[in-house]
Amino acid sequence: MKKELGLFVTLLTMGALAGCNNQQEPETSQASSAETTATSMVESTQTQASSQSETSQSSTSSSQAASRDSSNTNSTADIYAQIQAVFPDLVLPKDIPLASGKVLNAATAGSQADASILYYGLDQQLPLNDKALNEETPIAAFQSKEYQSADEAAAAVNVTADDGGQAVDLGYGITGHMQGAAGSSYLSWQEGNWSLTVRAVNQEEQDPVPVAKEVVAYLEEAMLPAPEVGQITIDMGKNDHTATTVVWQQEKTLRTVQHQDARSALKMAVSMNQ
Image (cartoon, rainbow, N blue to C red; front, side, top):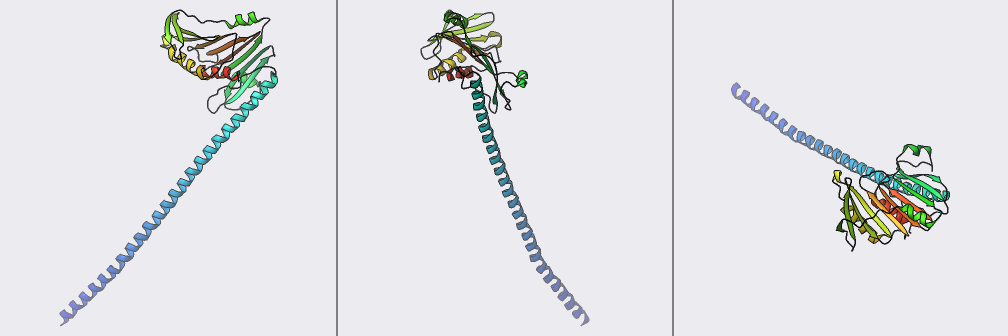
């Protein structure tokens, strides 16, 4: 009888323990589920905050870029006005192409009869003719010079076009002529009263033909000033502001624009015809 009673107590105890364990398992599961939900909510909140931060940063960057562009445009317009005030009677370039993000600066010299302007593309706006510009490298230049006679002005153009050498089709019905001399190749052609020459350095394996074709195509859309005599020289061997020179004579006046980039030099000259 005692053995049976002991066995009954043992079974009863084991049943009670099993019941306790079964009650604890749902509580543990519920706690784990609650913890997972909380973690998901935190991660979701963090993701939303990160997304909002990135959107805000992107919007701020765009706003700052637009502000810089607007400021640069205003600075450029202002420097044009200041230069024109120095030489009120001269026709001056109205478009000086700059690298993205740069601000136009300038230094002037001379008088109405013999004016010179150097242009700079810098990170900040300096006053016109600031002494600090002496330490900078110009990207472009303009000169206007009055001669005693139209013949003197015409002679100063120094036309170098040559119709000798190999014929090259430049498109739009224009034929250029290429010949070599002293390690260089010269490709020349004529458009109206303008003579054009592209010089390429043979040692650098430069080809003047693509450059010449690009110039011809551009001048089909843009109109240069009408000169009595004009010369455009593109020197592929140079990389400073004298790399491309556009010079032309109108009566007793000789005008010259220069830019380190060929198309930019042409744009400068075209802007004086507007």
